[in-house]
Amino acid sequence: MSDSIDSEILSLASINKRHAFEMAFNIYWDPLFRQAYRKIQSEDAAKDLVQEVFITMWDNLDQLSQQDHLLPYLYAVLRNKVLMQYRKDSVRLRYASNFTLKEEDYEPSAHHLMINKELQAIIDDEINKMPTRMREIHLLQKEGNHSIKEIAIQLKLSEQTIKNQLYTASNRLKSRLRLYDSSLTIIGLILSGIYTHHR
Image 1 (cartoon, rainbow, N blue to C red):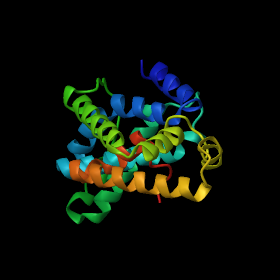
Image 2: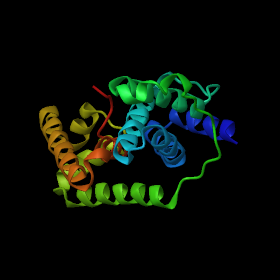
Image 3: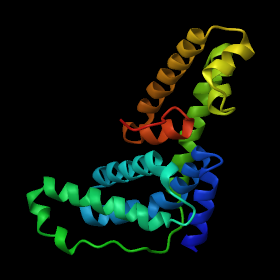
């Protein structure tokens, strides 16, 4: 089952990276979180680690091929991040050598799907509150995948004006997402199309 899902996600990534990410996020967040929580025994720390796993996946999604196995890859990334966490905690270090991760049955939990739905609703609401021109520019880039130059030509505006509007739109979304849940800000930014590379 996971192989066919992985193949579908990675195939979609070549067409629409953000939608592929969202699909992986919906399917794999819950099993990754449960695994992280079992090892860390802290809900907040587990959430942070899984967010880092998805950021790593986003940054490397272009390099993954349809032949790769996404879930084992995500577990491997999680394993490394948990081991790094263990190294920061001398009490947990003695358990690191016995740490193993394996694939397990998974279904997106109702709680997780609710979080994803809430995040998308917040993003959509903030976009709808933007001034008309700002909203149009944001959607042309994030949904229409148009370049700044293409948007400037289409709207008969300078490229600097387009950049300024996109910068302001990005800041509005970031501020709104931080108010919702700072630990999920990066995920929200990826879903909104704002986040493109983890620095």
